[in-house]
Length: 158
Image (cartoon, rainbow, N blue to C red; front, top):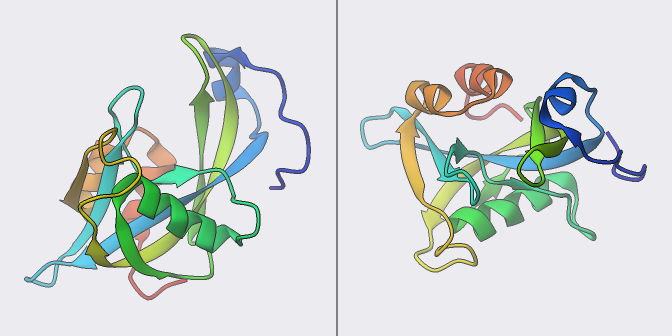
C-alpha cells in the first residue's frame, strides 16, 4: 500500500476498525535465540496506552521499507541488528488520533535479528521494552493478525 494517496479524514474508532486500510506503516519483528535456543521477541510499550506492540512507524523518506523498520526499532527500542529485505506479513490496526478518532492502517512487518540493545536511544524515557518467548508475545499483543504472524514466524525467512 502506498503512502502517496491522501489519508482519509479521522473517523470514529468503530468506523475505523471496520474500514479498509488507508495508510501503511512498517514494523520490526525484533528477535533473538535465548541461551537455551528458544525464540524470543522484543516488544515495546506504546506511548499513549502502554500496551505491548512491535516497534513501528511511518516509512522514512530516503529509506526503503525494511530500513525504515530498522530505524524505528532503534528509535523505539535501542535495537542494533540485521533486517531482512522482505516483509514476512502484514496486519491491520487503527491508528488512534485523539480520544475517540482514528484511521485504519496496515503494517508491513520485517524481521530484525537483534545483535545488541543500546541503553540510550531516542525514546528510552518514553517506552518500556521486554523480551518474551514468541508464544507469550503473541498473547501480549492486541491485534489477532499480529499474534498469528508472530506464531508463524521462523527465523531465516524473509
